[in-house]
Length: 267
Image (cartoon, rainbow, N blue to C red; front, top):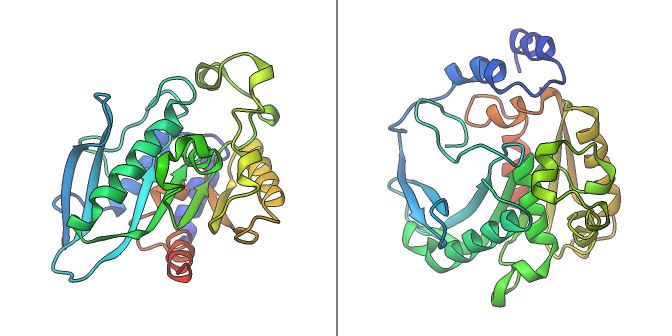
């Protein structure tokens, strides 16, 4: 991160502001068509109208490659995998629809990704913000896995909510989790993530709202004794809740570097 960008992010502060943060990062991104990349959009992976995914695959590459499934955020009420005119993220009704959709997408990838050059034995699930909650819930709760088990080789979670009982839930959050406090513990992924059978990378941003930083710390502590070992932890200095993800695809490697190292380390 350059000093100029760091100053702009610091000026926004701990506020989750997609408009101001997007204006900083949008000029750094390529626009379609992406050089060296094939894009196949709006492939249906489930029965709902919005059960659609996009596939990005490298041109002219032989053999199979690791696969990353990205689950975007949106505060549990919005967001999209691709927005015309925007480079970012190129949603979901009440609980447990998020984890159910992730499960459908994982199963579609396992069954179909080989035809796009993907290695179904090396699928990595990556979620950000609300998407991290959905990805984490899928990974944590076997009822969403179907008959083939968890189906992923590794899990990457960035700036998510993992324990609904210990987070200042807004009306948007409650629209997803429900407003009955007696259900929040069972609907939180942190319990099941304590026994996650695959390696994990947990990342956060220095300028995340404090409640998100607390969630990251709590999850890392909770997962200290998982069967696959304590998760790798990354805190991105100078980054905010949104700049963390918006930096992917730019020259900055504060997050993409650790992700690539993590994927390469999992065999």
